[in-house]
Amino acid sequence: GQQLNQSPQSMFIQEGEDVSMNCTSSSIFNTWLWYKQDPGEGPVLLIALYKAGELTSNGRLTAQFGITRKDSFLNISASIPSDVGIYFCAGLEETSGSRLTFGEGTQLTVNP
Amino acid sequence: GAGVSQTPSNKVTEKGKYVELRCDPISGHTALYWYRQSLGQGPEFLIYFQGTGAADDSGLPNDRFFAVRPEGSVSTLKIQRTERGDSAVYLCASSPNAKNIQYFGAGTRLSVL
Image 1 (spheres, rainbow over the protein chains, first blue to last red):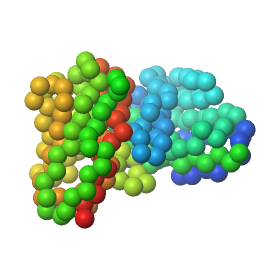
Image 2: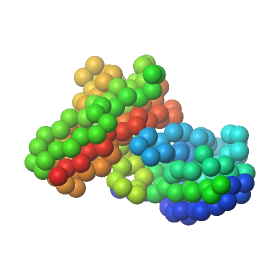
Image 3: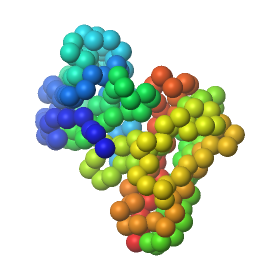
Image 4: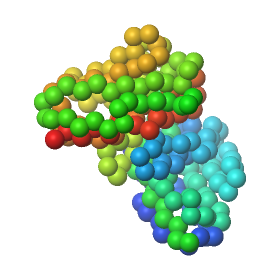
């Protein structure tokens, strides 16, 4: 099935550094979501974006809905060890009804 | 807990066997979704229920896969004649209605030997 193009695939950073990851698609999306998944758990929602150009923050996390509606990015500022995990972008396509399309994930490792 | 509950958390079966995976959605959520997540990949959509009916089953890979939600709450994903390629984590999600945020369970890890 179709998946979003998410990059980078993995990141190794030092505690305190900022992180940026992004997703792109060839299709137009109405909603962009960013999830975090820890081992043995399901994805947990971090941020939801509903309008092109929207910039939304949740604590140290900031995400934007691209103005073309075909991309989104997530920034994490001042990373801490508990930020470790896999981050997924997901979206609702204009034509896909209610089913989410996911990226392949960004594995984040934070070294103390 | 008030979250999405999936049972069992792990299921090991032999090739050719039949399995059932259960999902208890968040109380009051009318929409329920099944996704499959292979190792190193993002979840992929299988099927979505609005109430008791399957509103979109376009992600089911073949006719060995079937899901039901007879009373509009609990759902069961059924896989017949399992194959080794069916091994994956099967995730369930629910939302208050079709256009709302989806909340995920912890998944069932299926291993077909």
